[in-house]
View 1 (cartoon, helix red, strand yellow):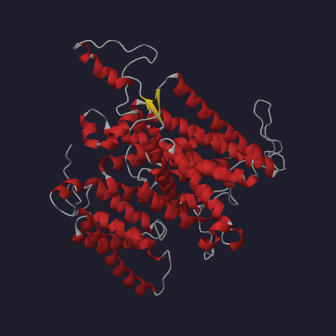
View 2 (cartoon, helix red, strand yellow):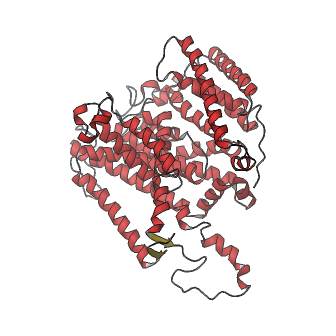
Length: 126
Length: 415
């Protein structure tokens, strides 16, 4: 479905069902993550998941969108690099530019590999 | 689909419609500050700044198809350029507009380099990074000598105690706005003069942004942009310089987006990283406004911005149940906060089901039943009669004519 919705429809795949199931699964897995995160944080608020969303999307992009293992590795990489830099360069980076470091890493990697570290390269047809 | 009236593009009837529409716009523009209350003028000023920013985003997203969630950073560049130049170095606010454009243009061109390699959702993330990092960069203690850090400008060390027009009683402060000896606003220290003054700044900026967008979209660069949006690979094969097009579009869009940013800084009289439209929320607002109005159309952002601002303004007092209009009261009385955001979210979802191409998209779909504007025949002066087609003779001249004067798709698709 991801590579070509129309032709997969023609090939007999029920695209609507696939989309419904995948959205449902994504929501369920996200909810699991939310349960864990709320447990760590000991409180729940509306803006709670905003940072998680940001870091989550950064990690997914860095790893490549179609690679679950890549997301895990990328998530760990971002977290470690970011906190190392923020810790060692407290004067220059500190807490406020922590996010910036994470995104610089992502942008640099994407410049070299536009589909993420472990994502498959897409071949475009005209 | 048959239409009731058929109009030839560039013909007298078409010009009549154009002139009538322009007259209506001008009359509304003049009626609001002269007839309306100060509240209405302020609301319209907000709508005007928002629509200018959304029009700038529209160039990148609607016409070139590059997802940008980073326009709040460009907006912020504009606001901070004005803020820093006025409060640190005592520039005239007027001169900060071109500077804001130039600064944001440079930033935009820089952003376009990743955009030339990164596509789709990945690009969205890169621009999201820009939007998230910008306020933090302004808060950065190392830059506090320039940006004022988390508290923003103006601060105790700045030369002037406002980022905008230093309106006040003392010597050297602005009291009147005169242009060629004509003083249209009167004493600027009164709120009744200040409000239309800011309104007109925002209006002029919005008009300039509209005209620039219109000029670009209808030019050769605009056709390159649309080609890149529709199929990047095909556009590159056809000879469109994709990298240059993206750099130009990002630069101009960023520069245009900085202008309403400057207006905001001037109106507020201070900049800080906490202003909502400088953070990621601003980007999302521009995006929503543009999508609701209709991406890839000149009027989409305008209509979207009007709708957005006036809905949130109308519902602003609805936290108090008594102020909800009678018929709607049962539906919204439970809400203890203004329901504007919720109403808009529901409207957004509903619109995406009914009209995936926005309000202007609906208009374009149904207006041909009433009036149809027929595009001018390819490569011809509108005043001359169509020449008799020669057999086989036009084959060499036709491609050149197509490139220079023709629009690649029917007019309704582009505008």
